[in-house]
Length: 150
Image 1 (cartoon, one colour):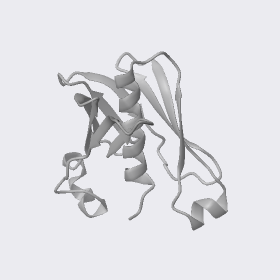
Image 2: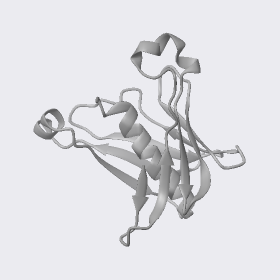
Image 3: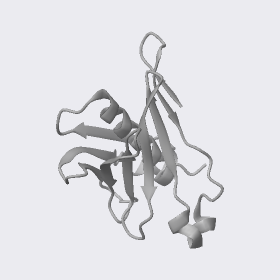
Image 4: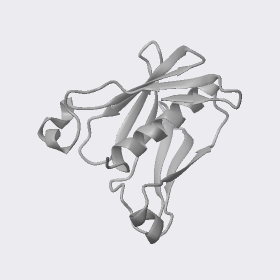
């Protein structure tokens, strides 16, 4: 996926490598069947978002280009909440909250009759462009994994 600025120049490039084992059919192999997303800003790789194998809460780890763990994204036990927002918390490896990713509840009609989803990212601290790009890419990964069915 390419994200461009208003002049049409690509500023963020996101790739999600194909996995041999994805989806519910492979749930028995879950600890070994995780997904990841690679992010580049202005053509330079900035890191990878990797799903961590857990059985209860969805957890994603952000790794920089050297493979160092830098951030964690943790969601609620249930990603399909009726009549309320679903919030994922982004923390540093020291445990400090830096952002939240919220899937907004848009009402019964829109949620059941359309495939549209709205997300809000709240940055709680000053982050670099690369860190913000990784959080934005994480939002797309969360959407693909929990809210897109086709």
